Length: 50
Image (cartoon, rainbow, N blue to C red; front, side, top):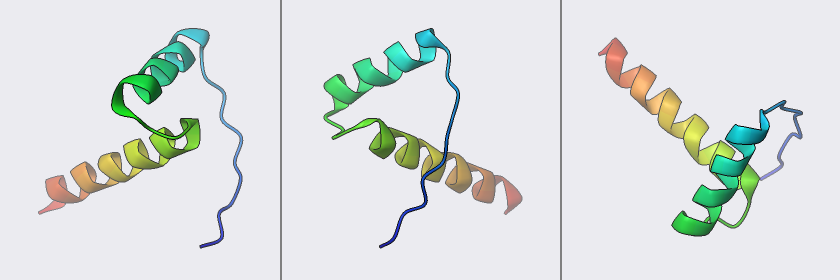
């Protein structure tokens, strides 16, 4: 699957929290965390529409 690269600005605090989550939850990288959290947010939003 082709992926599009985007640029995102994050605070140092949020970046540190993402890095900690990467280690704790076993994500392979920051991009994987961002993709997972985006899917979760979209799913939660879809559930609210029902």
